[in-house]
Image 1 (cartoon, one colour):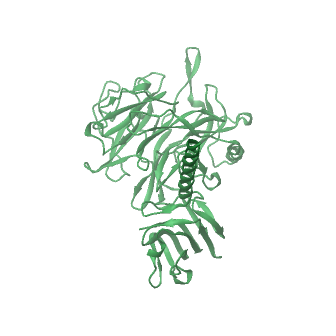
Image 2 (image 1 turned 60 degrees about the vertical axis):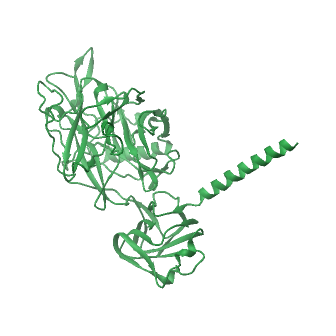
Image 3 (image 1 turned 90 degrees about the vertical axis):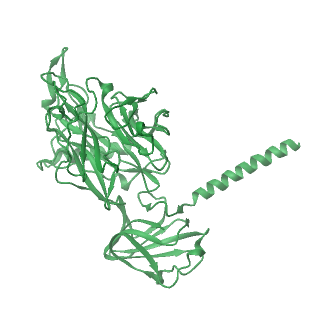
Length: 507
């Protein structure tokens, strides 16, 4: 009997402890460690006369890297963001291309390298590493005759030993981890490859202190996103499904296809068969940002099968978010984050946009290096008969690497017009002695009140924030009693008039 009582008490204690832990976790903490964004409803308790807006990055007018050499003559793309190497004071960019050697029919994937001092003007140095048509005078990084020799991703890891400073993945049908001291001389690791179809992304996740690789496999509605994780770049988890298209994507997708085929401003579709319309997730980078994770699903809008296999269609990029890499929320009602460009503007990104692995923070902006393709399929892609069937042939100068810039923290804003709006947070723990906002109140103002154990943060004491600021301090008249907030649950009510609030945080 005593044993039963002890067991019951232990179980009760465990349950109580678990309940207490979950309850504590349910109360968000606002700390100086991370800014608080509004891409999801995590901190939002109540909105009055306030709406959420997803902001699209502004595209740079010119392509950054174009296909100009024979070994990159059809299209250049990237699945890896460039990175800064402080010891060398240079930006490094490992990118990919599609090219055809000599008079052969089969195109090859090539792995290439570029450098820059400012992230805008990129040089393609002669590396003398890999032969192409009898010469090594090129910027090719790795061998390219077989799919497993194709260098797909490269990240720079300054925290590892010099011999493992660069980490990459080789292969098209699978991703084989490899390490390098300089990004040019690679040693494949004797570990299992990460299985994938022909798409993937890979980053180092500073938030979780781990490597993330999103790969493509089948799931509901077709192509979908799976995640593999590694703490040491050696042992990887089995890829698990984290995101796929749903029925609402099909409804919205058919609307977007209809809008495209009826609007002459867009590049026309070569294949348009409504019975084959479908939307799936072709690729999705995932990256940490201010204590949470953002994903950029590349949605493929299929318009019909081509005569040589695969499908015609176009891609658009949306945004999703998560706090745990498991439960994902669509941002701003599935609005488009990076849109395609209209035809006739001498743009590459009229048919396909491949999002970057992550944005780069530069001088108060987020820089997105992305791939743009003019068209996915056109009659010129049908090559001569080989082995009794038609083969796919790439069209020259069909893709380039482009740049789009966004305000730092500027993914989503909470907006109010002439009529004052309010944003009331959920109950939270507030740590710090000062509070700041990223906001645009050029035509209005923002005030705030902290509802808690002291009235020194009341609305009538709030000093209005005016103007456009990446960092503006919220102040209250008198002597605000920050010490009274320690360990207490409070709510913050923001008052906005003709203003946009992007983020807030403490210091």
